[in-house]
Length: 299
Ligand SMILES: [Zn+2]
Image (cartoon, rainbow, N blue to C red; front, top):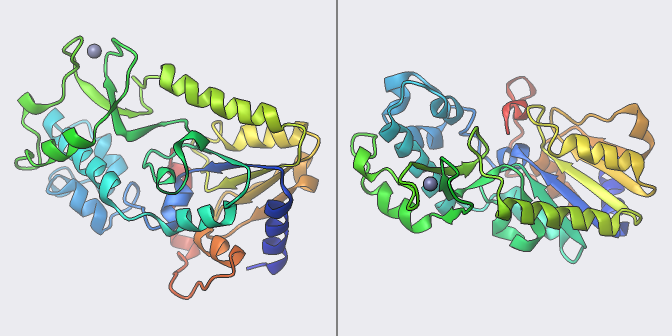
């Protein structure tokens, strides 16, 4: 790890008037949450017998497998959402919270796993891709999202042979159609809650645009760069005193137009944050470069 880069990042965090954090899948992957895209113990637990029945080897492919029955899909949704509620808080998140403690920051994320909510106040977070902990009407017949913890816990108990019985699949109280998780997809509801969060983020940007602003990009892949990575680069280019720092094992990319006001740390986020905080990295293992989890496939 390049000590000069760590020192520069530290200095930028210390001296910034405002820090805009863009956190994506790489943040969760660095904490060990890799089951969306790889075959591991957690994936096997969430997929149950469906992995072998349909021959998929990660949760992402499971969700998009067209052969799953509705009840089977709901079994995976329920197990995943229950896991989102019950899993440990990732170490990268705890370390980031420590690094930003006392600072004027705002978080924008494409993650749907709610990990940022474990360590940061909700009024400083904007979710661009939804959140598994909420449901919406699939028909979008009305503008509301519903916190689902109670329902998820109860329905998880009703899964039989890797499927939720049809009559238990959640229905909309208004139109009678199906409910579905509030996560980006064809029917994703960008209603009043979404707009409110987006406006809060825009306000933070407007308030600070002429100050010393650090844009800190953490693990944004190349699947959806338009939500975080590209706007960050554009604002750094246009704003007088903005600086761009990216910590990204695979996609720490800097366009030449902003090279003089940027820092790329091409390494594991978990290691980088530990070194930033002067903590031991002994218990961490670096993914081998050839076999690294690919955030480019991630929302
Ligand atoms: Zn409805």
